[in-house]
Length: 307
Ligand code: FDA
Image 1 (cartoon, helix red, strand yellow):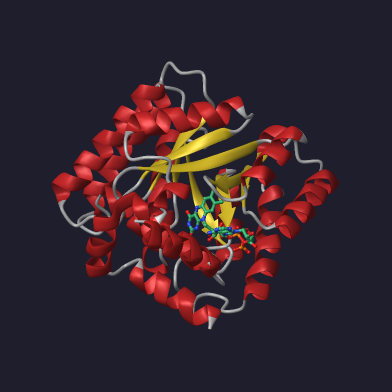
Image 2: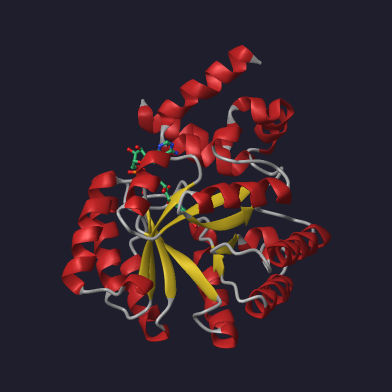
């Protein structure tokens, strides 16, 4: 039953008609729990508040699967403006971007041009950009673009994400290791077939530990992005055993999920970075968060009753 609910929510996350319907209800659907606001100033406020609680941040201006070149260029310009807005602010903040928002489905060259503009501005303002990993159909091309940008801008300014649910991920980490890459490791949030991804959660969790272990020993930087307390406990131990220096790894979590755990880890002295999505295009992101934990649908229903 839970699996059916999960599959339905992930299918809805790509359904345009459902999106139009949901957006009419706007933040009343409960999206505000995972998305602090729609404007850049809402994002600045969220970053400031998290900073006061000892938490670093990465910003995601929401949007994905864009099919118009002008829209993709506007998304890139907005990323540049976001970097400029934070240029003189004293926060440990960087940018996370999705290549399908920046024109990947229209033309790879357009996407590269947009990414070069963004990463060049990040370099000039001393910031970092991470390419989020989307569905499997975009996986290889995302890694190829990451490699090109890495060759131009280096590990200090560009990184990407590896998903534990994919069978290929351990091989990808081994292949990237010579770059000493900065990788965020996640379990994976899209609906993928058993031909490419582990269907069982137990296997995903095992592979997650395997790729964390590989990446911690790669000489690159590792962001362990999970709310899974068993994995977090295991990772703390593994980092100690391997003597990984503090500046080479951190925990990451999503805005609004397990906030007490986020703060507790920061109080223990661990570096914790919160992924802060903002903007009007919250639908796909929000539906994936519901699919991760179908119990969340309960609070959506409550918010509909209150509306
Ligand atoms: P798991 O799903 O096993 O959850 C562990 C516990 O965390 C749950 O028992 C619950 O307590 C809590 N929890 C998890 N999700 C919740 C939710 N939605 N609501 C309430 N509680 C929840 N994916 C991807 O494919 N590409 C990407 O680029 C990224 N980027 C990314 C960045 C960051 C910073 C994070 C933390 C995650 C991502 N993800 C991602 C999402 C990731 O793949 C995964 O779907 C979620 O992190 C949920 O998995 P957990 O590792 O938390 O474990």
